[in-house]
Length: 304
Image (cartoon, rainbow, N blue to C red; front, side, top):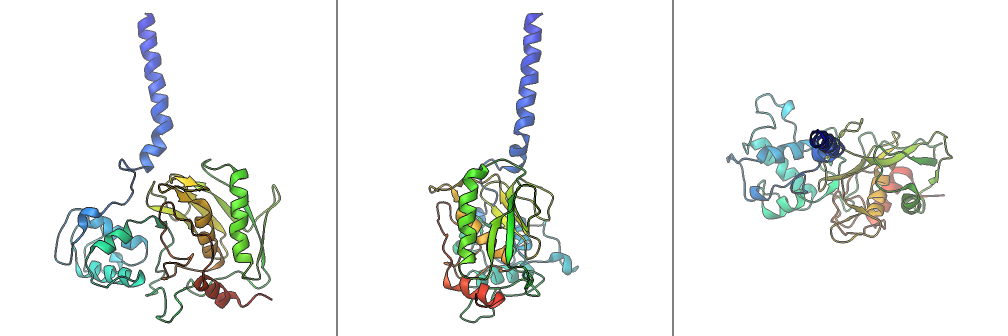
């Protein structure tokens, strides 16, 4: 009898362990990468290769491809490299300063597999991220921005998953905001406890109640929304750090980038710019570059 009770107790314990682990099992991938298309290198129009649907879904997510707008074509779930996919790949290559071959060459595959921001590169069918001038910054459709009488913004911390304690997060977020304050008319301050804030910052996992779900480690790192929504979310499943090694993502670098979105900047084509879409593990990219400064000042004017 004692053995039977012990066995039942062990079963109950294992069930609790599985239930506790279920979120990470659902949102993490077995190989630690949420988007691995290395085997598709060299694919081009006319081919049918298992896994091309991943590329279609990736390009749809980031604004390059819209199968639903063309009923004459199949949806994004097949593995056919059709003319729409070729066109989307070319657009992606142009936006990332790659040779626009339309094929999945090694440089394109490598770029697509980099961890990146979840904000689309192309929004509402605006074509290139820039107009082809020396500047490569871009704005949201309608040049969305905070109203002229709103230059003092407050923020608060609200997470769905505890990853980094607020005491650790607070100083790096403050520094990230300070970089944008130094080149604009904006001031930023943490809201008093219980007070309403303009911006909410936190860690979330998977589907978390907004328009974009997170995808586990190695894919989308974070996302933020254009003015005046004021939402900035980190993907809780990433390997975050305040002092990153080559396998970790820098919290502060991502904060500076996402604040740019909160203020109204989209992605830049300049790889050195804060507003470039992708980040390497271990990379510390915390300082605004000339393109970032020119972009935000074009949107809001020079600080007074």
